[in-house]
Image (cartoon, rainbow, N blue to C red; front, side):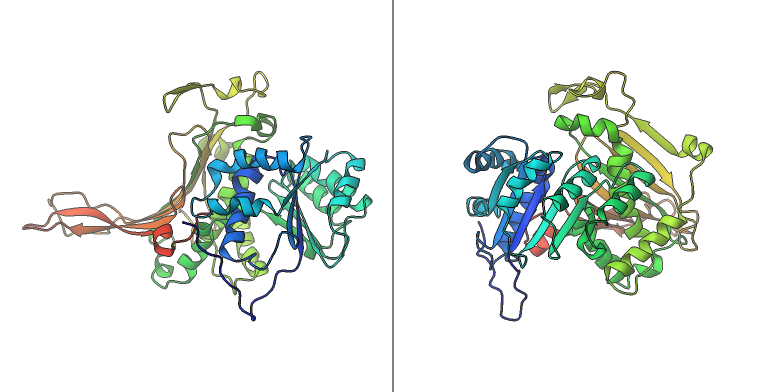
Length: 427
């Protein structure tokens, strides 16, 4: 059942008129992540005062479609990704969505975009670049040449920001020629997940964990993002990137930073960034020996998935013959700091895994001495299990005595399901 939109009070900020321009608006990321998330914000109140004339989403793509045809194409593509609690609002939400056929590399196509956006400079204009990073500089230059950049513009750069340090620096330098730093947002969409943001609340809003969140009490930390799908239609992009660049150096590294960082002085972006940076600088460098001993790479082979035969990665459409790109990577990282010295952080991610799961498991050390010799049931170390997807929540494993005579121990869990506890749509 769709809940009625929440009413904003007079004291709440009113969102100014907004044109959200999505490069790659007909692509997978827009259909799977961006538009379903915007629908939730639209339905639950954040865009409650916006009409379709005030709040507009302009999707850009290379398909020669009119608006009605694009709406039909988009509805089919997002159908499996909408939260059931807000799916009924999709037809109304479509009234906010416009479409412009545009080749991002063609300067003349930006004239059509200029005609589609509102010329009033009081309208906030957000350019969301959901494209490969090698298109970033060209898009920014074409936007500026077409006169589409003004002081109320924002530029969102979706990860990855280049392929390596040199390309990232080149992109930043080029973008800053046309946009001020305050206008630029470099994002990792994974950080928008409620459970990821809740890591801050878990760590710094509860005195219970802070005394134990260190090398003396933590045995190891395991961070896993597993996907049950293959590369699908993204082989052209994926083969140039691989699991390490696509997932590990952004999603998993961000999670590691949040788990391991010291308490920031505040929740301001700069304060949180500074503490994350300290963790990155403290990571133990990898030389040839560490790479050989602590890193595993691989690619999925042909096999059965849910009763259907699937291709090996090297046989997928669009994958070059003889490709050595990894679809799975795992490594053991260490942080050279007083808090974490000697504690291994295991990071792993892959496609075509047995199940879709994203989780962080903090394993605490075993008891220094057990007073339960010979009892039925082993005494297991405590673990904190943080589930990011598909089910968001927390589980704390504890040892407890089973009812009845005698000392019989069994591992049991205290569990918090975010969806049940807060009754909110999943992002």
